[in-house]
Length: 351
Ligand code: SF4
Ligand code: SF4
Picture 1: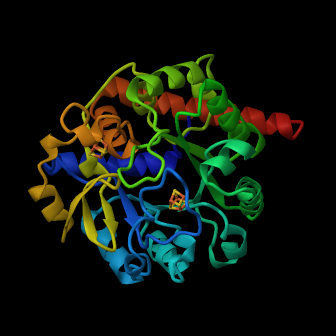
Picture 2 (picture 1 turned 45 degrees about the horizontal axis):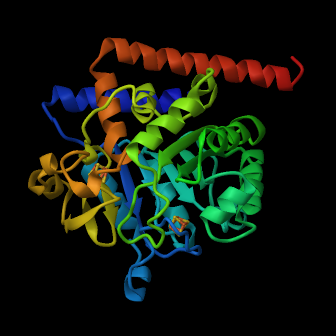
């Protein structure tokens, strides 16, 4: 497991500051969606079904900076749509990095190699490349052949140029413990990405393919099987140990979607980037006027199958931050992961 140490320290300091101020709800990660337009049409996507006039809309650099400053999150995940279609995306990234934010730029990688020159490597900036499986599985997931090879080539080139590269992988009903292991072994050991993020697909109401979302019990079973045999510790997963316990069904906890708010061309999406129950005009309004107790599994039919990180990772982070035992476990995992990486790197270099 591997959340970069610098990022872990910044998030811990942020949480401590908020709790000392008496804030009970605050942002950890901003999900920034500066456009909904995309150059793919994945079957499981719930973002690209907007009418053409909405797909043409863009957030400006200033709107992005204002949203980040308004909610105060130390981490920004820029998604969409496909952010690399946005003509000012490099300026948005630069402005956020300048402000000391950890920025993850999510992309399907079709335009990535062509646009690498627009970005500078930084410990505060990472590409987050969408890879749902090995070649056949990924191309099936994004409904276009050749995309896996393009993404792999872009990752290799970005790493060669010194960028941090992470991946995000969503699993659906076609997946099982073996497909999960195959793709994560490939990303971790062959492609050697810095970290990996994983999620069971959320059943977007608007997604054209409603047949292939994982239910809660199956999600727990396949993650438990996939993680067995020490892989969980060996893989450089960008998650807290508690969120991975949650995916395996070792524990359960409530949704705290206010920790990963979503800002888009419509404003602050209520309650999270997966569910659209209206929009607020400010983060404060989102916090104050959302009935948070009516969301989460067991509380809302639209949340019934959700185990997504945007609802449950903030709960895991806050539980870790307020429990000395869990905090120690997270630190130990980071140290163990760094040790495994140094050993693997020495072995590769013949040292
Ligand atoms: S790449 Fe992402 S935004 Fe584009 S269609 Fe696929 S899931 Fe949707
Ligand atoms: S459980 Fe939480 S994160 Fe999932 S859809 Fe519901 S509100 Fe969003």
